[in-house]
Amino acid sequence: MASPANVSPCEQLPVAQVREYLTGLQARITQALEGLEGEGGARFVHDAWRKGPEEKLQGDGITRIMEGGRVFERAGCGFSHVRGPQLPPSATQHRPELAGAPFEAMGVSLVFHPRNPYVPTVHMNVRMIAAGHEGQPKTCWFGGGMDLTPVYGFEEDAVHFHRSCRDALAPFGAELYPRFKQWCDEYFYLKHRHEQRGIGGIFFDDFAELGQQRSFAMLQSVGDSFLGAYLPIVERRRNAEYGPAQVDFQRYRRGRYVEFNLVWDRGTHFGLQSGGRTESILLSMPLHASWSYQREDAPGTPERELVDKFLVRRDWL
Image (cartoon, rainbow, N blue to C red; front, top):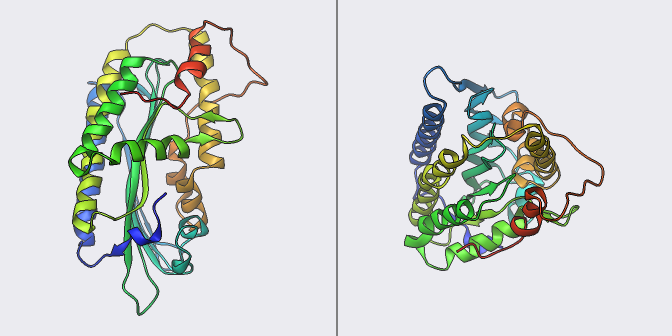
């Protein structure tokens, strides 16, 4: 994991430049999903919000949420730009020198839960955080990544997704993909289940080692690669036939997704600990999820294959 030495002063990178990119990214992604829904399909609700000086956090954002679509059962894509008087504990465990410092954070975070069980759930997040005690230069770092969580596993989908992640990072150093891939595998792990959340992707945090402009360019490359990484998989699987048994398994697997987000996810913890907007923080939750006591799927079934062949740490390339 990156150390506090990787953060650096923020003054070289205008906040307005980062904000413009992030709001544009949110608009492009949500427009693409509405295109998949087609004419007469579901559309995103745009919920613009603002937190005033009387609240724990100040700032604004746009939550875009789609529910009950032809392709997507629930899809949330949020932008937020907030300031607070004190970094929450989830953000200072690797940089104790910034404990209690005022901070500014902005980012785009999305989770898409498709209707068809053969289309995987996807998560993507890109963010920047700046913090510093009064009278000291602010330090600035980036974080984010994307990961895929299938209900039914397909090798070609996993390979395509990981190849897209590798290609997005390649201009910034061949060593970044294997490093961020391992980081993703380690992060999106349900420790209480001894189980991976999905087939992974890339994840990075506390990152500024390329300098402000170059690190931001890497962040942009990750964000810009998302649609190419995910949409071809959606198109390949969206019309696959399925029945009640597949929906039942989908909801069971989404229960695992809920467990990770509430128990282990640092982004969820950061938002709740810092006084963020609860409805926006929990846009990652699926519309339906279920739990089953000690479920065991028979060997040789696609359901068992997911656990045995896909929810393991593998070199997909």
